[in-house]
Length: 462
Image (tube, rainbow, N blue to C red; front, side, top):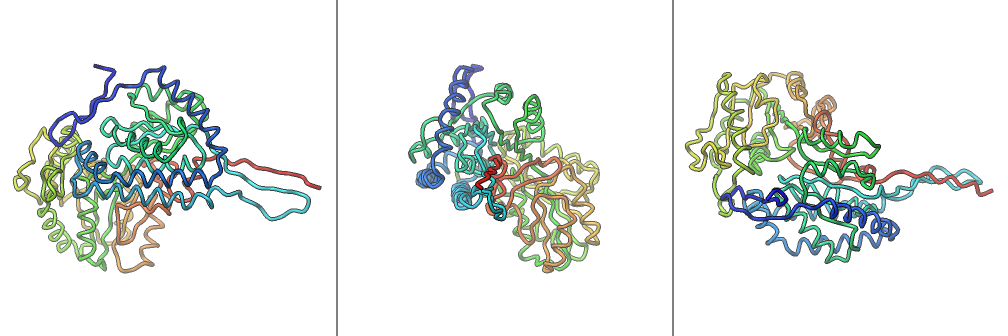
C-alpha cells in the first residue's frame, strides 16, 4: 500500500517496522498543536525546561539495551557498536543542556545611564527536524534537544529506515513530562515534507542528509523567509605528515574509515601520506583492514556489518571498479571476506593505492568502506589536494608539531580541523561545514543561535 512505509532490515531483508504515512489532516493537526503547545512551552522558565529534558535523557538511557538492538535491526550496525550511539546521545544532550543557561542568557551591553538595554534570545516557534538513518540518534539530538531547551516546539520526521528512533525520543520525552504537542513525530514521504516546508507554521528546518536533499529543502523554503540548517556530508581528508606517530595514526584512521561500514558524514574517505612514511603506513593500514570481520551484525564478534541497502553497496563497488580501470591498485582481496557479493549489502572493506583525483572515489562521496591513499611530498601539496573537493565538513592532520597543525589548518577549507584524531563531534564545539557540506551550525553555545532569534530591548528609564 502506498500509504504505508516499511523498514527493511539490511541484515536479512525482513520487515522490522511498518507505519502508516500521516494524512494531510493529521499533519495539520500536529502543526496546529505544536504552535499552541509551543507558545506555552516558551513561557516555561528555562530551569524547568532543562529539568524535563534531563529526565527525558534519563528515561532514554534506561532503555539502552533494547534501543541498541533495535537500532542494529533497523540499519545494520553491529551490536558491538550500537550501544555507543546511546552513550553519544547522552553526552551531547547533557552537554547542550549544560550550555543552555549561558547560551540563552540576555546579552547586555555596557551600562548607559538612563537606559536599560539588552538582547534577548527568543524561540523561533515550530522547528521541523529531518533526521537520517546513519546516526539516527546522534544527528537528531543535535537539533531536537537544544531546540526544545530554547523554548521551541519540535516536529521530528525520521528516515524511513529508522522510524523507531523517532518514537524512542517521543516515549522518553512523554515519560519525562513534556507537555503534549511540544514534541511530535510524523511518518511521511518526501513530497509531503516539501509541502510542509511551505507552511507558515514551520519557522525553521534542521536537515541532515544528502546534497540533493539539501537543495530540495532550500528550494521548498524559497517562497518565504524561513531559515534552515543543512548538514550534507563530506569527503573528509586526512594528512599524515612525516613526523606522525604511525602506531597512533594508523589504527585511528582505519577506524575512521571503516566504522559504521564507512557510512559516516565525517568518516575519512581519502588519505594523503608523506612519501617518507608512505610504504610503512600503507602496509600497516592494509594489514589492519584485512583483520576486520564482515558478517551478521547480530554476532558480537562482527566489527563490519552490512551497508544500509544493496544499492548503496553496489554504488561503492562501482566507484572501486572505475578507479581500478583508471590505474588504481586494490590491496584487499574481497574473496577473503565470505559475505561480499554484488547485489547484497554486505561489502568487504577496500584500500586503494595508485589513486588520483580523476577517480570518483577521490572526489565523490562514497559513504562506504573504501578509501584511497595517495603519497605527497610536502605540506603544500597536501593542502592543495585536501582543498580539491566540493565538500568541507572535517579534515585532520597527523603530526607531532602542533604549530604546523595550526598553520595548515588555517588554510584548509573545512568546518572542523583535527590534529591526531578524526570522526568525532565535540558537543562544546560548533558542528558546521563549508561548500557542499552545508551551512548553519549545531552543537556548542553557537548552535543555539540558529534556533533562536535576537530581540532587542531598549528602555529609556530617565
